[in-house]
Amino acid sequence: MHDVTSAAPIAIRTARPTDEAAILDICLRTSDRGQDGSQCYSDPRLPGFVWALPYVRLCPEFAFVLTRGDEVMGYCVAAPDTEAYEQRLDKKWWPMLKVMLQHFTASTEQDRSVLSYILDAPRTPGEVTDLYPAHLHINLLPELQKGGYGSRLLSHQLQSLQEAGLTGVHLGVDPRNEGVTGFYSKFGFVEIDRTPSIIMGMRFA
Image 1 (cartoon, rainbow, N blue to C red):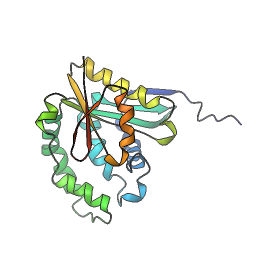
Image 2 (image 1 turned 90 degrees about the vertical axis):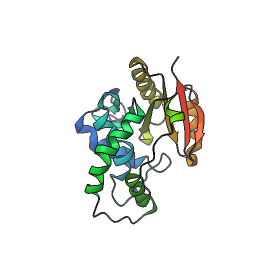
Image 3 (image 1 turned 135 degrees about the horizontal axis):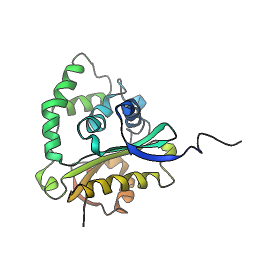
Image 4 (image 1 turned 90 degrees about the horizontal axis):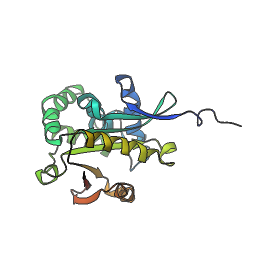
């Protein structure tokens, strides 16, 4: 029997405000080492509040989604200037979340980890941002993690950053998901630090 859904066209476009719920959901469903983290969080929005949504709001020109027909299946978000982005988070984003979550009670280890991050978000070291000023996050739902779709989406983001005049970009990989580093290596990313996240960077020629 022909699967109409799987035959729907795959496309990449700039994220829209109406995509925010889907982006939060994708972040949740890939938050456990690339697998579904729905059971890890009492509030399903928590991982996306840190690693997805602020990019869509604060750096919309570098927020892209991968769609299958009308359905958002993945996203790649980036901040072109990590230092400036982290300053904006400190001034606008984290204070808003602290108010929003002031009555939230953490009940899982992951809940506590995200709340701790929001209360005292770490700054990226200057030795990273000096050479790799931009950073990005990319996540695709499992059904599109094969077939080259992630490569297409990442290539689109890297081209956008390069065309904007950026000299380099970095990203972080959960050490429990170290196998994915091979994917980034194909694009020219190399390991530059462990914090304990595996930090990988690439320079634009």
